[in-house]
Image (cartoon, rainbow, N blue to C red; front, top):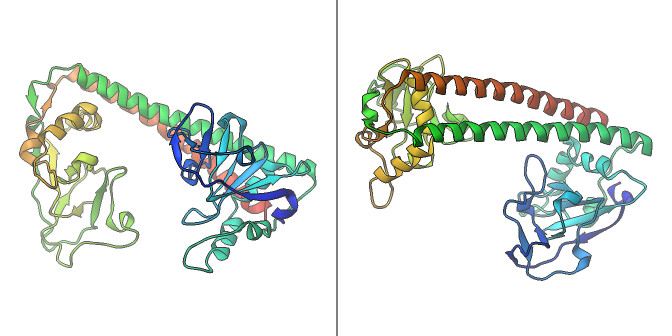
Length: 367
């Protein structure tokens, strides 16, 4: 059991978070990344008051003990600095006879997640106390085997973090290049020169209902709204979107709700959306780069209308400035985008394979 591998459990301190003092970091549930379980130091704070008994030490595993994050775990690393843990966390200090990485990886198994779900479902507010965490039982081989398993899983974790950093850097590079191209250009042409509105309606035809997410772009409405389709029973007025069409939500374009549809079969979207088509086939790459740029974002926000809910009309969109069409510039942007797209595809493929590999070891070895 987990309790047998620990020198005890301890609850965190109850202190207000204040501006980071440069030394004493404050570790709260929200400072642990949901995907990687790494410490997020971007919004680092300090506790208003603290003592050394709440200082996180090497070999410590911290667990969220209440709320929607119950069971979330974090293994302390010295590189995260001097940290004091908050009250909604429980500290388990792994004893010297057990590999702390090995124990930590036990908390990433399906078995542990099912245990957390069952243990925390006994009341309206999910929660697991220290005695209950101590009761979690798991597979424990000899120390030598623990070391081998932990080393393998750590190597996969490290590789995954490296891949994620490469993808983030490539995305930053893409944005920087796009911003540079448009910020250095003289915008002497209205966007309306490049696009024309599509007004086709669904009528009696039946098409899948889609929405536009500000992060993903076009996706089935059921996917965006967790299995629910919000479309009305009569979708005859819904707008048809063909491959290569762009669409945006006038009331949400300020948060990025604009995208190009690249699916094969036609779909329909709510009548509130505005659909438009590039006038020439070669304009798509230029428009995609333009809509990703800070130049577009800043220009678009100055055109928003309305007192309560800011919207962007098609007329205002068409009046936005965009560089004159330049074949050389469009070719350069396309080459850059293709290079980054290939690199992202390659890195994401590796990333997914390593996720699957880690899952295999976690859920086959730790039964």
